[in-house]
Amino acid sequence: MSTYDLYVESGPRHRTTMVHVPALLGCVAVGPTTADALQTTPEVIAAFRRFQHRHGEIIDPGVAFEVRVAEHKIEGLMHALPTDMTPLSDDGVDDALTRVGWLNDELGSWAAALPPATLDERPETGWAARRILLHVLESQGNYLESAFGSGPEIGPTHRRARRGETQISVALQESVALCRNHVALATTEQRRGTRQLEWGSYTLHRALRRMNEHAWEHLVELSRRPGGPEL
Figure 1 (cartoon, rainbow, N blue to C red):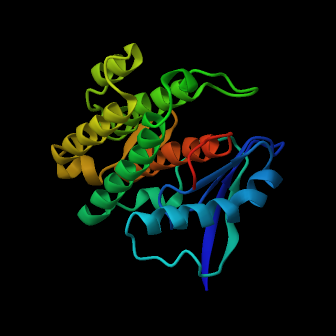
Figure 2 (cartoon, one colour):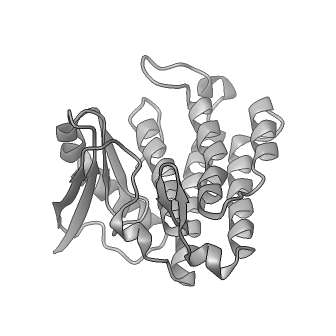
């Protein structure tokens, strides 16, 4: 039976909490309190394993697993994890970018199947779906910029999608291609090095983890709405 180490982030009052699962790069559970986030983590892990399986990764989503809290930081959110400091292999980088592509495809395919007006409907809480999708799109280059000091030119793609000149599903696919090309052009030092920023140490590993986590977090959020994508 697999046991997944959990890295938990919250404030000192244990309010809004993120639970990271580094062994499943991109898997994160979010809750309004630490207790809520930890309670939903097994469900989120199971959904992530199904996501991996349907995209061809060698994993049996029916196998039981356990979780344990390896570390709990109470200084707020968005810190580097210990695993972020280990450079990914070339295959690991490629796998992480491939997974971003799967996430973008699931978000985009769901959006493309809906009437455009539906994407603009405001739920009782949270953003309209279109705003969420544009937010995911816009952020993807920012993570690589944090790692490298420069990011892919996703801005024009984002503007076309925001104006309705490009379907969001197409724009999300373009984002992955732009990110892949940007990483391919990076130097070895950039791919394996560490940048010291105001908000801590940043590596390509951290950037790709957050890129995946961010898309997954919003895919899960949308899945919990009526008519949302199935996980």
